[in-house]
Image (cartoon, rainbow, N blue to C red; front, side, top):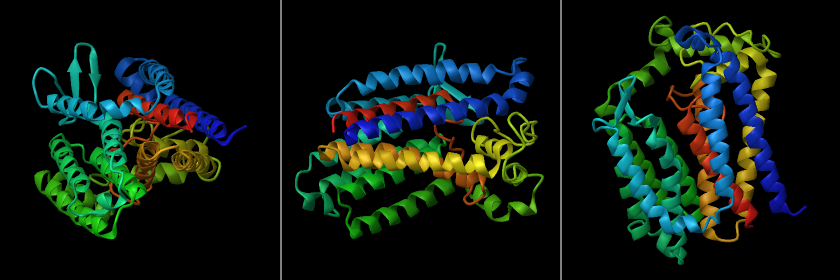
Amino acid sequence: MTSHSAYYRSLLILTFILLIIGLMALISASSVIGQEDYQDVYYYVKKQLWRGIILGLILMFIVTKINYHRWSKWALFFLIINLFLVGLCFISPFKYIVNNSNRWIKMGPLVFQPSEFLKITYILFLSTMLAKVNVSSKIKRVFGAPFLTYLFTLAIIAMLLGLQPSTGTFLILALSSVFVYFSAGLSWKQFIVIGLSGALLLGILVFLAPYRLERIKTFLYGGNDPLGKGWQSKQSLIGIGSGGFFGLGFGKSVQKYNYLPASHTDAIFSIIAEEFGFLGSFIVLIIYLLFITVGLKIAKESPDNYGKFLATGLTTSIGIQAFINIAAMCKLIPITGIPLPLISYGSSALITNLLAIGIILNIARNN
């Protein structure tokens, strides 16, 4: 078996394993809220299966058949359309407000989160731009056209996502785009500029929405208010700690009984740790690490820079989501509202990740 065939199959197998783990975790984590809200313990499981997994897999397999070079011709168009859809989140009758956030749009029976797809369209745009720069010195110029274009487009996205607000999505975009630039030959001067720009943007976002500062304070001093602002972090740690080494057993979570907020979405890792213990949590971590390793191997063996940049950006985007979610549930970083990729409930995020995997698989096929 050639290396690219092995990587293709490995990534596909790891994707299916994560989907199966997610479906099993969701059966337990969403049972209580499903019964309370819809009198159906499998309500969220059914929605995830039909609107997320099955639709996402169909789209993923379609994308695996499309040569990844074709996306470069439409990269700018896709990004503009995506930004336009993000803008519709603020305009009636399209805006669909959930938890005081303008992250969703409603078009007839269809409700989705357009900012999720920026995780693909922006990486497509950035990879296309960098691949067209043939001379490495042009990429490394601090005030060169590619780098200024990168900063300008990222600033526009920061403004739109900051208004929604969707800070977590922007954080993923910013970090994954930095990895793409690293693979293209990021200079230390550019790294400093990105760091200072990121700090400035973070300060602006905190100023525009003081609740972000409250999240940081909750992370640092949440123990002083365990029944209020520190409730979710406290309950998440209780769930993780209650699992011990082998866990309480499938379906035996206590935290899902309205103790842990967002138990079937952002906090589903805590339910996995509670029911399957340290052993189950460790296996999930290993699977994500293998996923990232295989994805970066595909990027390394890509036949051209475009495939290298694209696979790097899409792989690190999924890896960063997993790291941030798990770290937040373990109270290593402030809670950001980022779901666990391929496991948490949510059709938009799941379909986006499966589309990204489809592109990576096509790069592996064309190696």
